[in-house]
Image 1 (cartoon, rainbow, N blue to C red):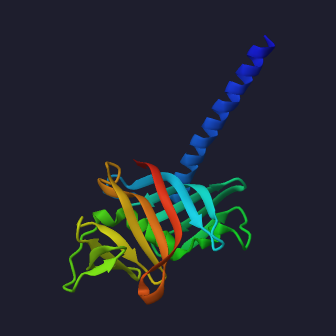
Image 2: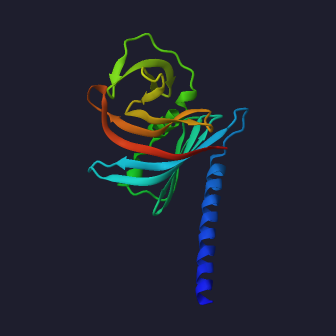
Image 3: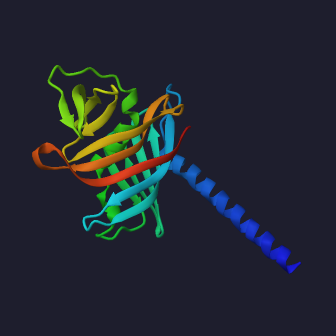
Length: 222
């Protein structure tokens, strides 16, 4: 009887934990307050793991939930750590805000800024963007040939891969963002990069050291 009660108590604890996780996801959606519009779906939620490459050569791993509002092109990034949650938000007006646990000065999560949040957002929705090629010679980046496109957003330059005809490279003032492992997504009604790598701008405006990598495991529409 005692064994049964212990097992039953453990099951209740597991169900309570699962319920809390589901409530947290629902809470995440309400925090973003995606505006309604005629676009369907109006928001997309992506789950994955992020690797942050630290200056000392070590790596920092954290689970991620990214919520993209397609009506106004805003993004909320929730990072789950052992100490709690860190939530970064870039809204439609370009305002970048933080809420959550207090981050020490040496926290790897301090890498997040307006540029990086914007690059993640644009990489996920780039496949849905209309664009034309600028009449210029192709450039070789990451060992692949690209044409610069007419698309310019918030100081980001978008490049089309000559082999795949995808917008899988975006360059900002301080970073290169590159998409890999493209998969079909009914949630986005387009292909999306299952992996995104962001590197700093190095010598001669070429890709420098890796800053972070995101590997998505799931993406769903709301």
